[in-house]
Image (cartoon, rainbow, N blue to C red; front, side, top):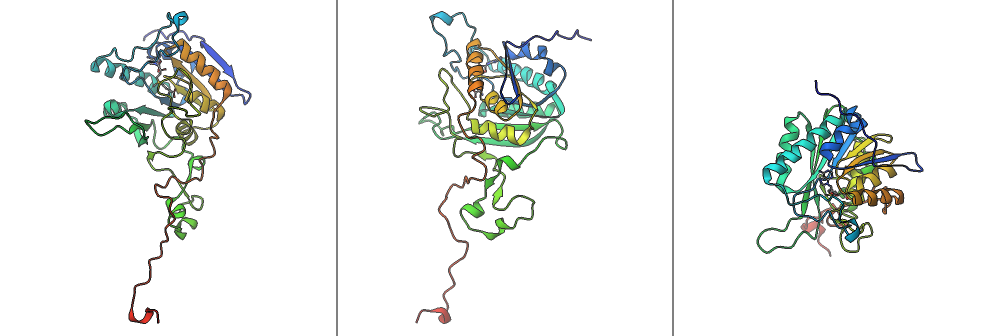
Length: 320
Ligand SMILES: C[S@@+](CC[C@H](N)C(=O)[O-])C[C@H]1O[C@@H](n2cnc3c(N)ncnc32)[C@H](O)[C@@H]1O
């Protein structure tokens, strides 16, 4: 039997006024995760992971002449084989950390989504949803279709014993918002009148990429996810008091949303500066009113249309 790794204290730790805690360990998640007590005791309820994509992103934007000694993740250094084995290593550590009722979400672009899906299946997890996060303003190109999506993969250890809370994420149905269809007002599926679950393609208000003068945008950070995206994940697939792990903290979106929603957060981050900035962000809390999306419509056309067809013209109903 290999000797158990001694647990280590977090590099940063804070308790919020609502009693939830945030703990962050600085370093490579592959070496730090095995030393985290909650990971060692397999007591994580939910993992959310938004890994580096090996796209040559600058995860070093905090660097100044005074901080040059900071170690920063080199996002272009790996060959395809190296990236694949890096991915499988952190995935396995995250799977290992989960309770039997635990679940994992992975945010990943087209390049590696297929490999991750197959790996999670190989590890006997069950796919619950393969969601697409659709955004406008992808990188412009003339030689192929413009990328406008990332995959949000949702897998559970046990599909029959997992956390699922539809209520906080319900949307107004198109039947109500667009078609005035009375069937949605008398639902037989137990859902509240006029509401339904979001579809598996995610877009809409406050679900765009965090760019330009977006109010959520944090300085010195590339690749920040929208708070509303994390709210959807955390509200539907975890409970208050749960432990949520994000191995790639970044600007801290998962941590900010989780702690604001009375969950406890643990995470790892390679860059010291990113970790420090994320801890400050956790104190500030989310920018958005996270509950505001409930009951709103994401219908593509919001022009109300009547379901009633115009009467068929017959000799009897001709105007006189
Ligand atoms: C795509 S960003 C995460 C963004 C985050 N979801 C957000 O909303 O801000 C990836 C982050 O992982 C960090 N990172 C990269 N490789 C890592 C590793 N092996 N272990 C821990 N953190 C790593 C990078 O420094 C970067 O901050």
